Image 1 (cartoon, helix red, strand yellow):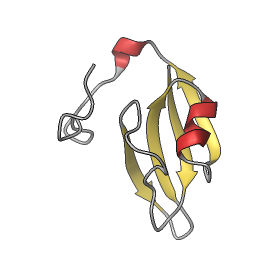
Image 2 (spheres, rainbow, N blue to C red; image 1 turned 180 degrees about the vertical axis):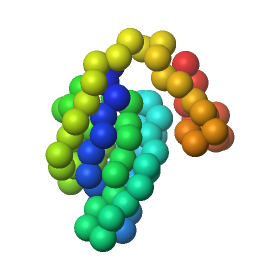
Image 3 (cartoon, one colour; image 1 turned 30 degrees about the horizontal axis):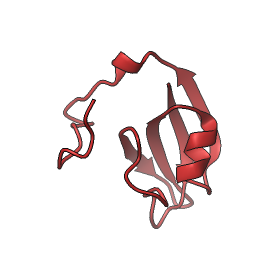
Image 4 (tube, rainbow, N blue to C red; image 1 turned 30 degrees about the vertical axis):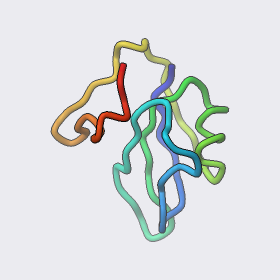
Length: 82
């Protein structure tokens, strides 16, 4: 599993397919793009859900490292179940 950070569509950063297998969120935006953070199985999977993704940076993580916080709460409704 990876945790990726990438540039996405400014007007609509949502994935083109839903539901995504793992959580994602928009961490900010500029005048040109949104910045999305997403958990995925691979960079290929990121491009499957966000074909417009650019400048993909990622780190390998273990599956049990998905961490929810006040800034990144567990998705509702319960579409994401471990």
